[in-house]
Image 1 (cartoon, rainbow, N blue to C red):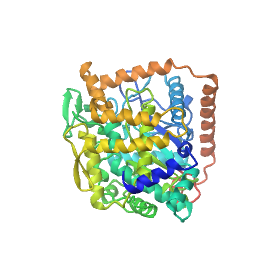
Image 2 (image 1 turned 90 degrees about the vertical axis):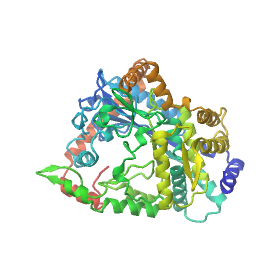
Image 3 (image 1 turned 90 degrees about the horizontal axis):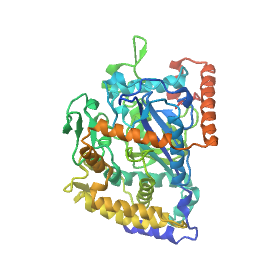
Image 4 (image 1 turned 180 degrees about the vertical axis):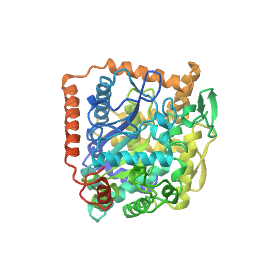
Length: 527
């Protein structure tokens, strides 16, 4: 750990305000495909018992009508996040009949793009915008990539924490400017060190051949039905997944808030020749929202995003410009198929410790050359992370991944001490020690365990994922849900349907005018 980081950590450990990080807020957004009993993507509409996917606060859909997304409220304790996630899974299983929630990030049997129904959000302008945006993703990238599932970890530090840190650093700027700069310090370092997440928690070393239409994209064959990488950790985060080549030319800056917003907005308002050939509306059918490099901000796929809560009708980049960074979204987690809700508490404790580490470490601006190195590291870890000979680029020095990972874990032990302050137990220290062992023995990682399980059971990827999905189904169907919790979800579903109806009835302008106002930043509600 570098000297300035040690000073920051020592100051926080020694402050009279102990347990400052207990006030940090955490939340999860967890995606899962609905599938039928044969392992095909469900063709049924979003179940009415789950409410409106447009307006429900906790149950919505991502790209596909079959791709559920569960959103937990922000809470201080990781245990609270996981309890809510368990309850929402249980309630969902009570309302999807014989369908299953797919247990892995890489999708089930894909029968071409037509087998992946695009999500539908009703007849309102905001609903149409969400649907047309997804049509655009189909035209630009195809649907298969959009059927990949992941878990996003949302995190924010408390006002009390920021006040102490700003005082210790002697920073006299306004609080919003200080906080935004600090979050971007964290984001830059997470780009540098975030490869550790797919290395330790990556759970997508294999994929059904149907995902690529049978085309071998430089993989090895596990069997007649499965492609894989022997040392792979997260094909989801590789060039066939979210880190795809289609956006490789984008130059989004994470060096400060203004640079980030400016570079993102240039991409949103700059026409792209390739997308222009697709057209926006052809023969009366909407194909995409516009022909620009990015239709909207969410189209940019990144490891980590700075976030601010947007007002009605406010684009995400404008919300950041107005409010500054209010929280961060970590997008590097695969679904762990061995965990019923897709993640376990020790993973989140370790991830939180890593985020604090990224905040306290010095974080110089990222040059174009370093960004290439960062992208290369992330890609190498996604495909070959468990290779004992794998070497990464650390500031121009070639280092073995395991040596670098061990060094970071050593530094995280001090961070865990800060996070465990005022607790009776030591979940953060326990998590760091647990995953330090995974650095030494990569057979303990989910990616290695998946391949070992497939070999032991003589299973292809689909058979393994189906077995785990059915196991989780039984766990949730055997999980008791209190009457109060069930009533809470039922009420939220009814209220969301009523809210969608009210939005649709209140429409007074055309969809064309709605889009024009949205991109001009009018008061039209959009998301």
